Length: 359
Image (cartoon, rainbow, N blue to C red; front, side, top):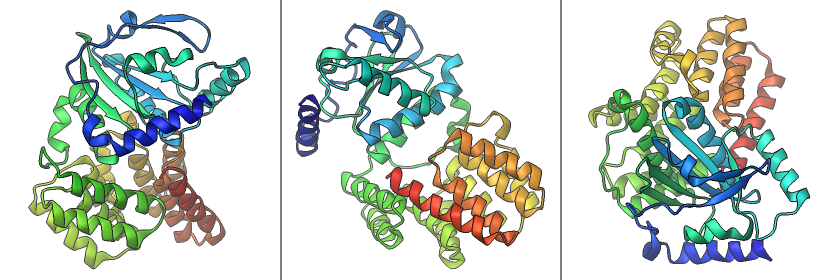
């Protein structure tokens, strides 16, 4: 019954999103609370909010976007926890959580390799206190206990902007590598891009192209649709289209991390392995939690017939993000090169399944 109530609130949120966006208001003071963690220890918000930046994620085990978001935040927690980032998941499962349900949550968290604190919001008291109307919902809270950002659900563009905020806060020296785009992307362009990205993850490439093109036409300053079209062209090995999109991005002075990785993949397809490896090494892969970066290194090393290092990099990539379909796709390219068609087909099928799972 509690689950039905939460689903209803999500539907209400979807219908009235324009009227409630950003509520609770940015710059409002975060409410204090005390909740139990999975071991039964009482955790106070006073302790949580003492970090330079705190992330509160309201989530539930039955909502796939919630689980995907926890996995994404784990990478940022691993990278920035020692620099002052605190991440806390508030499980808003239902009014009453049985011992069996609690054990199921513990098992789920262990399987997803989540190491940041998970608190149980029995009675949904904190859920109601923060006026959450969708799962997942994320709050960024600064050291003065003020809410600096509120994000309902998991909209693609806004979520990436949120992660960009985190990276800018803890790695300001890398801001120059971020995508250059307008501060006010139109909602219509954003909506089309979300459709495009969802269709792309499902493997419905033609639909993805159609929506990405619409997003690009609606807002020419919006570079993400072009990045997506670039990625599609790479995967399809459509080099005429690829060159067109690369020129557009370069003419827009885009020099993002994502763009540079796509260029590295292109270099590998053009058999410029040493150039690609040199560029990838410049991103400090030993200290990186980016599965795509390690998969590209594995791809380049494999094509250079360095099998041991190739397998090592792919293993690292898979451990960093078991849901990243690109890892399986790129490894399949290597296996095809070595004429291991059976293994390559299995990897390509895995890549397609992962796309559907993370849509």
